[in-house]
Image 1 (cartoon, rainbow, N blue to C red):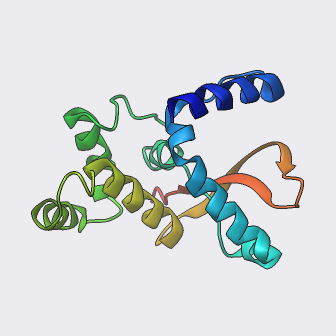
Image 2: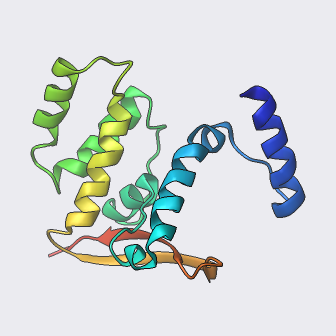
Length: 154
């Protein structure tokens, strides 16, 4: 994998003018699987949308970024504090995950990321917005966007 990462970084630098993170490289095969799935039926892009957990937490926290890294105790705590307002059952879920799964199989921060994705997708209250950039679509016409939820502040 290390050799592949070095080559991927070189190619990314050549084409985009920036390096490629190890985490991005580690999930690149999964990204390719999703891309292949979506391209098999171009109508799927209407059903499948993208979020980034940190963007979602930023929005749910009133436009304030999380202070602590998500893999730390303080980072987990602050993210759970945000989620409790929108998903009161999050503590029960986390307790269940911790008691029924092995840490090597399921990391708490991954559950928290999935939970904020659920809160965003379900949008019990508030409105969905998107972060978009330029270009706004890829070469197949798929939108390049990240969804996030503006919660109701009433």
